[in-house]
Image (cartoon, rainbow, N blue to C red):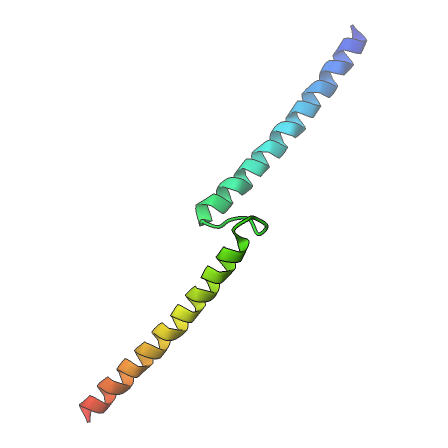
Length: 78
């Protein structure tokens, strides 16, 4: 009986640790999916980098267009 109780305790401990590990992995996966991001090492990483660069360029163009509009509006007020 003593041997089976020890085995049962070890089994319960292993299951508890395995359950916690799986829960953390699932949370990490959900967090990444919730943010709309892919893991860094995937088959689409080159495309993701290209899209990130394009978004940066778009932000630069938007800022330049806003600045140009402000300049035009300021000159029209004179």
